[in-house]
Amino acid sequence: MRISVSKRFGEMLQGMREPLLTNNLSETYRTFVAGFETTTTFLRWALVYMILKPQVQEKLQREIVSVIGPSRPPVVADLSNMPYTEAVMTEVFRITSFLPFGAPQCATEDVQFDGYTIPKGTEVWPLMCFHSMNAQVWGDPEVFRPERFLDKNGRLIKSWVEKVQPFSVGQRACLGKPLARMEVFIFFTTIMQHFTVSSSTTQARNQPLLSYSRPNLSR
Image (tube, rainbow, N blue to C red; front, side):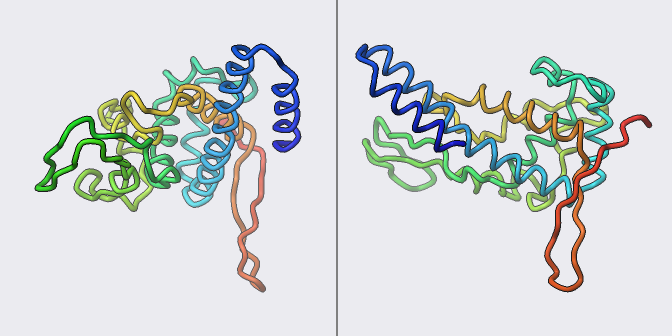
């Protein structure tokens, strides 16, 4: 499907004569295509951790039915009323660090940092995965624990959420960040609304097999 869409877009752009329209469509196309991989990779990892942490999955589903219900499609406005869901999403971004580097930056002047000199014009790549797994920041970074982003009353601690920046920060942050976050929330919440994911292991080959079932959200 991705190849087909890309081919059609390419043919469409080649057939256009207006440069401005072509450039606008091209940039829009790149924004959506760039989001395909990050969104699908997030969903893969999110499902893995829902399988590994069934208690987290159940608590997440309870929040879904409490705020959205068992059948209404989620909308972006729901996220503000779903602190645990946002905490789970943030923890997936943090612990997986599937975007290990931030957008490259450039030193506009000589900079002294931690005993090192970064000369003007040096390209700097933020190592996001180091920050995400820094024990001095998170205490137990190897543990999947969404509660680290919640206070004792279950409210989101924004200052901790903002420490996780998978799309980089500053003027060179990913332009598709708002779109990606909306997609991740809608897709992930919809899946968890309609399915419970689990894994069984065959004794012969010791290979995990995914299974899906309808969640019991009536309790």
